Image (cartoon, rainbow, N blue to C red; front, side):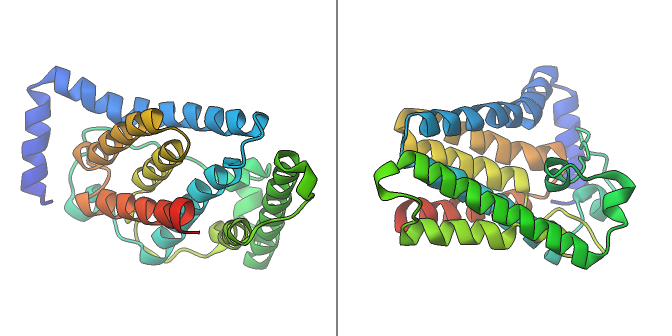
Length: 242
């Protein structure tokens, strides 16, 4: 994508209000729908005692954390920074998810030394592991609190990558890969793992989310494609191989 090619995209959408409205829907409303539908899927599996709950929880979590770690290490700029373009849709910056979940934020969190962040995120990862273990005990009372080999691998992966926010970011951007694209694909795979009709519907929505990111000007096409590939690869390994 070049500055000239994106200016043509901006002009095309500027002349077509209906197309711009559809792009806004795919860019903002569909991720919100994923945010609502995914917890409902997890709650349904959990309260039904479905043994697929643990993988449906940990595979998308591992994708999210892995992509977050890659973004910190690779540090490629976004189109607005690299090309000097004005995105069609504004990107909203959010505070760190894990610091919010743990009740930290603001100057307190930013002023903590690196070792303290690693320690706190390690505690958070251990909490995730115990929570998953407790869920497994609920789902499989006769077996007691015990993981199978695949479940142990998934839980440990989630634990290890949970320290990602404590890794210091190099200078640069946070464009590659697209976390929205990777997460959408992983969540769609979780739905496919549970229900084929719902999975196909969510897969279509995931494709629209992936396409909307470069069209909105917040990611390069390579970012969305890489996110989708990573989400697909981890989902195949997590849901089918392990």
